[in-house]
Amino acid sequence: MSELCIQVVPDPRGAWAVKRPGEATPLSVHASATEAERHALRERRAGERIIIRDRYGRERSTPPRR
Image 1: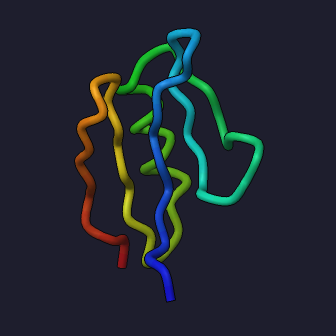
Image 2 (image 1 turned 45 degrees about the vertical axis):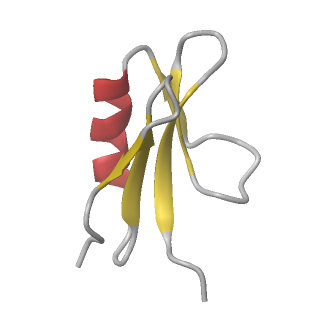
């Protein structure tokens, strides 16, 4: 079973998208990474980890929600 997650990723046009893997449409798009991360915190479900990817390919994550 794969880990449940919600992702914050940069958009090629400068925005930040909040999405779940396997879903074609983002949950939301924001002007800043901070706004996108706040939205991801509100949207995540029990057991989901938030993965944040920056524009340089680095990645960090939060612990899963209980």
